[in-house]
Figure 1 (cartoon, rainbow, N blue to C red):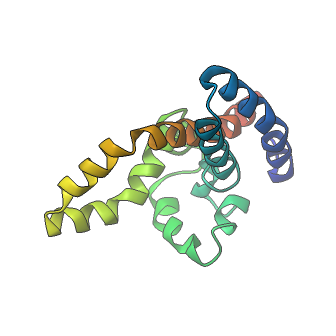
Figure 2 (cartoon, rainbow, N blue to C red):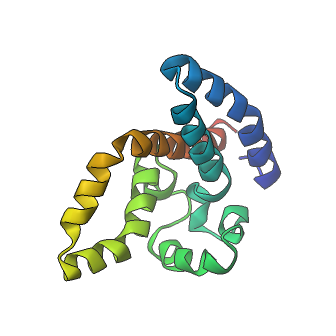
Length: 144
């Protein structure tokens, strides 16, 4: 399995490919740019290796403490951290738990639903970019 430097190189080399493919598919620079930033973020800071003491974990700087319970809950390379699609979904759910609880307590969940509906054009490329960035990490782990 690749070390951190190899993962970084793979992410750097695949970013232009992802960007070009996304632009060819969408013909939209805004969507492509959003997806690119999400891809790079996921590749370097939001991938499966947040389940252990790693470069992605340390890149969160003072905010890395939010990932310590995640590391306790999930074993390294479990399906919930390194699974295609499910790993990204669980990380998103993990990050959303506290804001969701606050919204449920304050009864403002409808505000979130309204916001999601009005920003779906931004959320879809973000989610796709996050998944692709995490997937390239997981796939490179399994191929080596």
